[in-house]
Length: 91
Image 1 (spheres, helix red, strand yellow):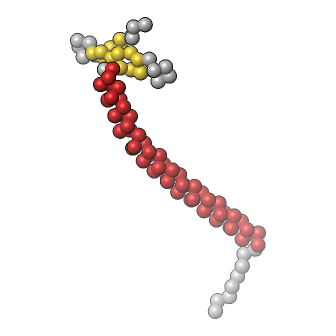
Image 2 (cartoon, one colour):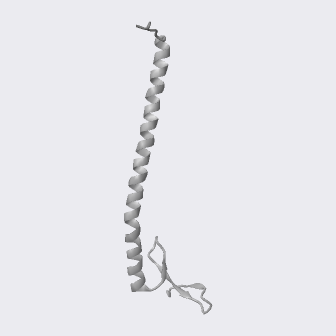
Image 3 (cartoon, rainbow, N blue to C red):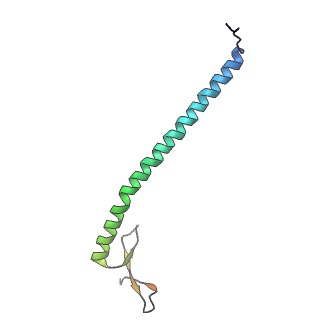
C-alpha cells in the first residue's frame, strides 16, 4: 500500500474554503439561469396579452399614442405621403 501524506491544517482550510466559495458561485450561476428562464417565460406570456390589449384599444380608439402616466392620448394619422403624423386631442 502506498504511503499516505497530508497537507498542513492551514493549507487544508484554504483549499476547503476555496471549494465552498466555488460551489456557492456555481450554485448562484445556476440560480441565475433559472431566474432568467423564469423571467423569459413570464415575458413570453405577457407579450401576447399586451398585443391583444393594444389591438382592442386600437379597435375602440383607432391608432393612438397613450401617455402611460395620465391616460391621455393623441391620434396617429398618416399623411398623404404615408408619413406618420401625431394629431393632438382637443381640450
